[in-house]
Image (tube, rainbow, N blue to C red; front, side, top):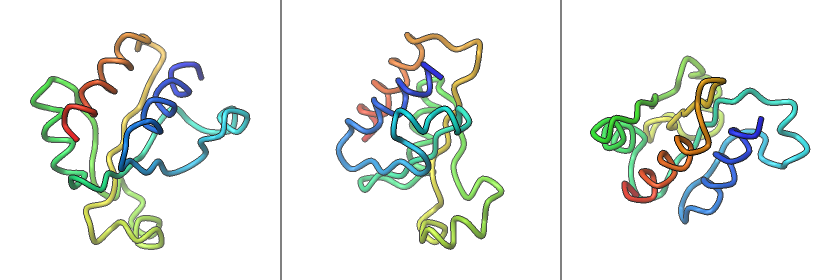
Length: 105
């Protein structure tokens, strides 16, 4: 939960980033540690590729939620970037991801 909170807080501070799903601190208890987002400056695929060049691997696209992506209006622009923080990640790794995202955008 702390890593997800850190990831969401960091993404929320990046200009042009829109986070999908629960973002309020109290509501985080009800969500999984996977965070989806879009950015106004680059497509999800461009972001994922640029992060991969930095050895940070994530997913882009509709992520098996095609109808949701259509309903959100993001399917036609490439879906979203999806990053997951799991039990073996560290706060330093989350910070590295956030720094890379800022560089990419």
